[in-house]
Image (cartoon, rainbow, N blue to C red):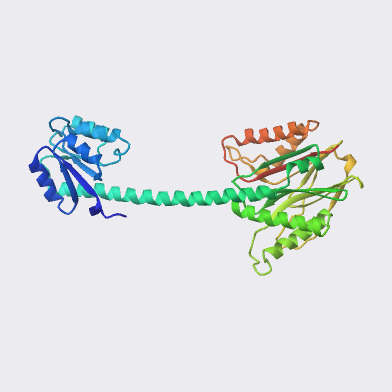
Amino acid sequence: MNSIYDYKILIVDDAPENIDILGSILKDFKKSAAINGELALKIVNGKNRPDLILLDIMMPGMDGFEVCKRLKANPETKNIPVIFITGKTSVEDETQGLELGAMDFIPKPISPPVVLARVKNQLELLSARAFLEKQNDELSERNKYITDSINYAKRIQSAILPDLHFLEKLFPKSILLYQPKDIVSGDFYWFGEIGPCKILAAVDCTGHGVPGAFMSLIGNTLLNEIVYTKHIIDPGEILQSLDLGIINELNKELNSDTLDGMDLSLCVVNKDENTLKYAGANRPLFYFTAGGFNEIKGDRKSIGDNHKQLTYTTSTVALDQVLSFYVLTDGYIDQNNGENEKFGSKRFRELLSSIQGAEAIEQKTRIDEALKIHRGDERQRDDITVIGIINE
């Protein structure tokens, strides 16, 4: 912080002897003086602007109250602290001065220790304020740099997400609700097509924001490699390969305490074989047939969890029996309201049941609106991804 002795003090009094007395008390400080209000304003608006003003009230011409009023009305001078040093010591006078923006009152006849203590107090506050403003400016600059970097990361993340026209090509009657909690998301969606197989996944990476976004880049790259390079199209085998890939990419054999990973639902639609195949890591598949709602629960192991060993299960449903199906991350169901109640799986199942038969665009609107009504003014808790397919 700045030394208080680096600040400049302006003494304003029509009596030269009072200026001399104050100058003697403040001998260790940088000072200037004015014998009337007009000269004081001229000095304040000049090149040698003071940092603190000691201001008499009773002066011929422009009094101290008017000087203070004009100082506080000017955006360039309104923050200069003013201490009134005056013989006008009634409650009304002090109230008027404080209402005009003065920081303190010192009555005449003055006490040198009191003057010195109060001047030092104001200058120490001024120094602390300057320090905080400097820190705030530095934090603002750093925040801007970080925010700019995150916004750039969002552009990268958006670029790797599949184009929505691709989803419409694969599944003409489709729903995608994708709402990151932060600028970048720990959720991502993935679509693919290889031969007669159309593949989709809703993926929830560990955390949200920047850490989750980094994981989403890794997951997207691995899925592309598994499907398009290795030509693996069985859902359980895809998850098995993804699990091994995450463990290898994060060196979890060496860093066994690393908790990074992902939960997901993955579906493969093959009209040639009349199959809807599914595998999940801690995330379910919801689907509707003529008989109503159905659910297949995912295996209870996150992708990348090297503390648990299992083979991911592929479940198969006859595609011509499926009217619609849905996969999602946990952000929608876990969203709380003002009473800290989650939306919940039961309510989500009831919501899906109520919108069956509606067009895709209407289903998306009602899913979105239901969450907004539930959430109210509460902040979004997690990234949200919901994918729905109406089977043709």
